[in-house]
Length: 440
Ligand code: MN
Image (cartoon, rainbow, N blue to C red; front, side):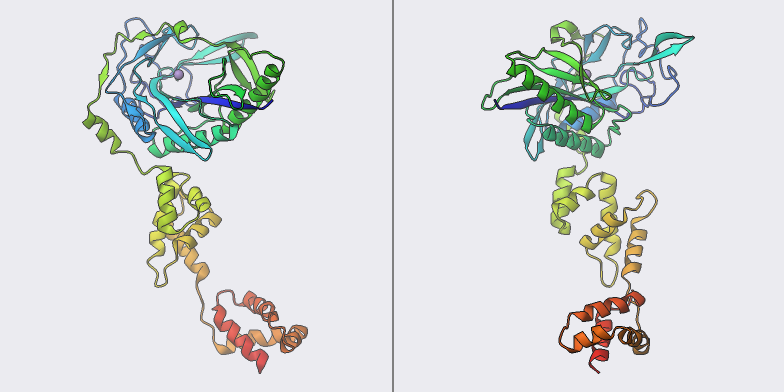
């Protein structure tokens, strides 16, 4: 029996705003001393009032616009209740039925993946399991509590682990182009949760179950978790069983997933509107002005590079990987155009890709200067040429005889020997001098 995967993704991205989602604590929490960046608001102390971070709201709208989402004219925050020690208030401020953005898509080579919604919420604290005074304890660090967090939810349009990976890479690239997050997966600033089920090929409805795999921190693990689940579901369905609807975790050591808990339904969270934050309204002008800050996005840039600079798909993809590299390339193209005989964008692209300079240290103009040095033709006199050609010919009698017998291609072999000693001389001049010497 043939099955096909039906996969949706939920992605959490921490925004790199200066301050928290609802307080003035630093949003940069990575590797800081535990519980040094906290206040009554993000610690959930009684009476503390949240104030939404304007930049975080604008950046979420910007991301929505970049993904082609519909931006809400009215949006609000809601309380999502659950009990866990890293959540001091007993609820997370999130968005329920009026998210900032709905719809949109990212195109992949396997087909479009539609975006269901994009909403804004706050991150939770972090638990640390440790041994203190010989006792196993769990410590809580609230530095991450209240950091602005964007959640992107896709439709279940993904049908392979490769497609999931491609989608995630593109989303990661867009987020970084927008400059709203480092989306560094090792630091947990981008976290991936696939929802996975399978159905018989030919069926079009949603399968009667789905399994969510939580908090994956690399594209490779996301693909591996999907592959693992697909096999597990197939085995169960072949036995006539339906996989249990649940949340599982990725276990790196086991290279597989493990059951964590049964999946909550929305009703379990007792969502209700956050009474301390009034609804937000956005005029068309405000949305348009946020949209005007969106830079040229990766797909558009890549297409432009291909047509403006006559680059192929692979080279254009490589050069538009990050905005910094793309900008660097364009600066280098400018620097290469000032020479009497300008270097083509293609030559610049190849040089850049082969040399892999540290673009934070080597200026584009310096890189082009190196290219120019390497390609520089040095003038040589006839005497200098003959002083090299004569001994080459006398020590390669067989090649010379072959040439004279009509095997003209040996001239390239001799040319190579001369070129070794005159790496910067003009090819045509060497060739003519060599022919002259062979035929005299
Ligand atoms: Mn969330």
